[in-house]
Length: 460
Image 1 (tube, helix red, strand yellow):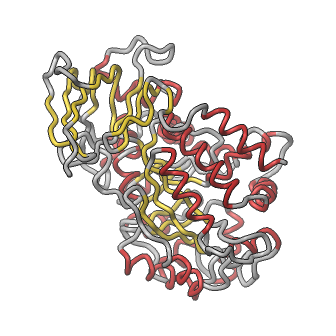
Image 2 (cartoon, helix red, strand yellow):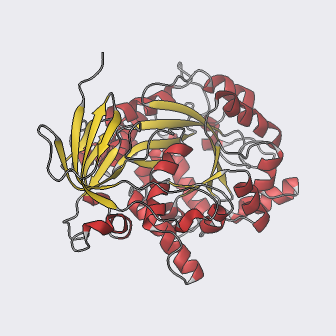
């Protein structure tokens, strides 16, 4: 049965569409249009009518600036429990990792569901309509499978549905603690033993209207080289997205060279992992040859600037990667903050700090990374534009907050990227359904309370 069409009237809308090609980071975008009416049927936009100065009768009115829904292309939902608590004292990525492992050890399917539901609701409040969940906490502590071997992954899929957003569950192979070393301690619950067993378990997962199933290689240190191809073939046979943490730390690069005589990027290329369906996450410490391999193969790059700076990882060569042909997406990763506007802004500002020059990406290009290219990296090619045929995913930000008031509406893309924050999101629409209305979540009451209760349960 076909749903009755619904009309939305957008006070201002960014209808940006621009080429994604090598060297296109400075490409412009369609300016903001005042008064745009959308017709939505069965979750998709069927008509876009600019030059509609007044709301049509019965239209839902979205005041402010409306953008395509945002995509958080890299998430570890349980890391949200670490927010602020890991800011006491000093250390490195590796000392932070021990605290993260201790939190992972306390997760159960029920507590993970409660936490992820609240985290995904926080994402919806920030204008995020799809998440890529890089999921590796598969089994019970000690490595014993649950009665349902995908109980943890199913908890995440259910949590996304209840929070009203889409999910690509990137089921992750995590099989070793380092080059030539078996998993130990907390890592035992991440491992299926070998890549064939990982593939057998992952093949039991089923897609749903709001959920797609992808694959991930945790890192070259966590999957033996001779098993990388098994994961890549699993994804290729299904046409599924494949993600991998790549060169986040120099220590990983050094260990890979010692074990295999090449960089992690070269090792992935040797085993058929790179390609247009693959996204490297972070891609921080790459050689010039690595950059060419990633870009030349069409492999995407997901930058997570707020996490990369929080963990003192470094600043990756995002501009060079895009210029070589690598599409850029953005993720909130450890959820030190959940704010895709801040991720987009930080990518540009990091490059300014590194080069001491300004203007490496237009605001339109940064919005593309936060929307269309992020959704594409997660296997949702029909999301991320306000145009006929696209899924009706929308986010509206206020233009009259203390952050956004002042600039003319025609500079809406610049205001969104360089001034707005997640706190300015007023509405989030996913597949034509209002998930956030006037700054309140319509499905999860009291999101702050839900977050507090879920985090407290892990500390009990």
